[in-house]
Length: 296
Length: 333
Image (cartoon, rainbow over all chains, first blue to last red; front, side, top):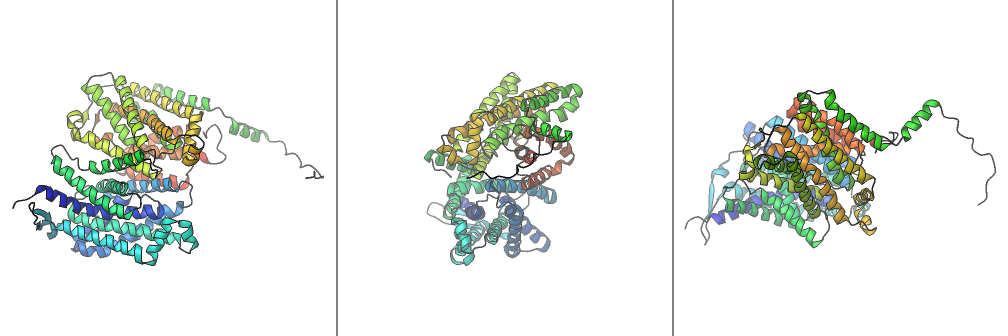
């Protein structure tokens, strides 16, 4: 039996969607715990990607092994960002707007630094996973995927399950959920908000790092990726609901499939419309909310 | 309560002449004359510096930034909608003007008025979709809307030329006329902001910004007012984009849709004071030079410098430069 291109697009979309899930989970975590929308999230992901790339280029490190270095490094950067951008303005009256403007300034600064340090060149870690194909037989025709897509999906699933277990079973994970429900009550029970916030920012950055390592193997990446992925994450979050982890997982998979099928339908003939899936997802989700009159 | 006896507090010593002068200056509250004087100076500038080069590379950007800043001020400053979508409206305005003027051969002024109507409608639609959203969520919605506009302009190749861009080389307009066009636009935008600030409309906008629920409870209907604020704000961005297209002679989806402009006007409003009339004007006058002249020498680090200024400003002067105590009343409005 021959290929089924539709099935290939569908499965490929699910694979990319799992990457969006792990990327957007970091952002959702921050929104859920401390109502901070982090515009630098896409560039944190790219930081992970560049770190993995240079570890591979300079030391020949396998990108999967480089996770051991990338994750703690990104966690540290996240904690640093917390003390730079969130902690000093925690008591301000317009806290959400202020952190939005600060992280947006951070977004511009990081974008410029990346371009000037690492140039606009497109980079990718050439792995054997990328060139090895996996054939998945099905009654409707075979689907062919690159091994790296399956690998990425596996990493994303592992990260998601670990995050879930962390929030469910550890003390600090439960403290995080308590703080997201009612900060003042959580503080009264002895939860130190400052360190909790720092930890959640670090975790969010580490999740971005996982996504970055996957991106470094799967795509040709360059600094503009940060902005594109930021919008994709917004699309996922808007579809899934703010700070809702289950919704984020569903939204990420839906967005991945939607993009993949858009590309499948238009087949590249009329430029690249697939990036529009995220924007339509954001605006569509908002329009539906407005019609249903459910305020944020 | 019984009146207590004892000596009255002694009267304050008579103020010195310098002190009286200072108090008079601080309380001199002729806002209209300050605004009119500023715009009169701006109107005289091209007479003082008549070189076409100076006008097109420096002077033009002063009223252009004033118009853009006041546009963001209406929605972001008064009604508190943090818009990250103004760069999209700018791009749509630029493309509408360029296509109408070059492809269909309309008069430039007519084209810009049509652009204003187009962005007015877009602004009303976005404002209406986003009414239920507060703060950051509205920012995301507008960002997505602007990115979608950019994508449409990029992919609608038969009309816009796609990535090849859209040349306006044959549409030569003297820089002086562009300058005065931008000045008229800036004056109109500032007038709108001034009228809003003196009107119950401004109070309604500010009530929504401070507390939407309380505003609704006191009879201010947020849905309509927020859509109106964003529509008004959008209507100014159309001609701003048109002037951008005319002054740069060539537009493509990455030059006409530039997120940096959005950040710059947010910065100007934040530093000048959100919901103020004169502060953003002063900041636009000061920073137009920084953004367009000083930074062209460091164009590689344009984003970086703007981002750092933004970061420091938000961190240190959240109420704006004119928000400090002791700033004379005729400046801090």
